[in-house]
Amino acid sequence: MESAPPSGSAIIFPGMGPCPFEDVAKFMLVNPGARKLVSIADDVLGYSLVDRFREAEGDYSEPAQVSFLVNCLALAEWAAEPLGMSPALCVGPSFGGKAAAVYSGALPFEEAVDMTARWARALEDYFAVAHRDIVTHSFARTGEGELAKVLAELDEQGEWYDVSCYVDHDFYMLSLREGRLDWLQSRVRALGGLPLYTMRPPMHSSAFGPLRDRVEQDIFSGLHFTDPVLPVVADQDGRVLTTGAEVRAMLLDGFVQPVRWPDVVATLKNAGVAKVFVSGPDSLFGRVGVTVRNFEVVPVNPRIAMQPRRRTGAPGPSSDKP
Image (cartoon, rainbow, N blue to C red):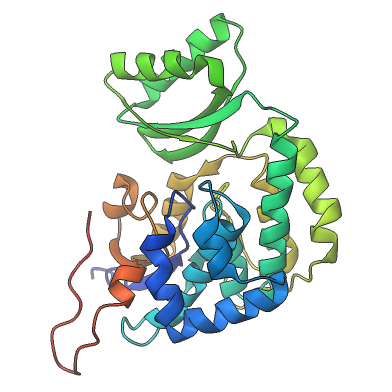
């Protein structure tokens, strides 16, 4: 007798990438759930989040990071009814971990807003002084063998590096000195790969232990983590987390440990997940091959949320595949 096909679902809060104000402004100003969360965030921050985000510069500014948190959570709230979203597991790779902590019930939203704002300031302060020459660069179409060649050559040159994210079996993020960035891009192209985005500030490296310690002492000491109602899958190794202490450690370990997305995918598959809802502006984790090959991917983004609602029985919203 054949076993039934997997039918479960999970929610993914994507990692944060460049997201201009114009891409999310209408959703933040019109959607009732987003407006409610923005109002709460305004009270916590002591300033207008929308106004600051509109004026902010840089992809990872304080208002940009808080707005990303707000939009991810507001979209998840919106998706429950029209998309019938009822996930059994929750995932938040990289910056998405903050939204996952809130949605799972492990951290109150108000505390997450304050944490995110102070986190952003801590990043800016730390990298203004330390590791000023380090960036994190992403590249695709580069297999494990090709990556090994690149790393071996960096070793021969006596260069420091750290693999910051295993996005797929041929897709990585590598932290290294900015002075070696042109060399890396040229070498990746020569091996048939595709250089992509350079991230500033860098993230997910064992070199950033002092930053982790500072955030734990100055920010996390005042947070109140509780056991999540919805289990969280750790983005570093795919473990299923069921305690507040584990979720807290996952967020802190994100400073010093790489994201291993294929491990997360393996955990979701083993748990019987067939469909994933990607809640938030996403250009990576919901679109990468290892995700789309293994799951039905349902984007939950501002464009879809702002489409006119159809009457019951009418065809659903159009797909939003890349």
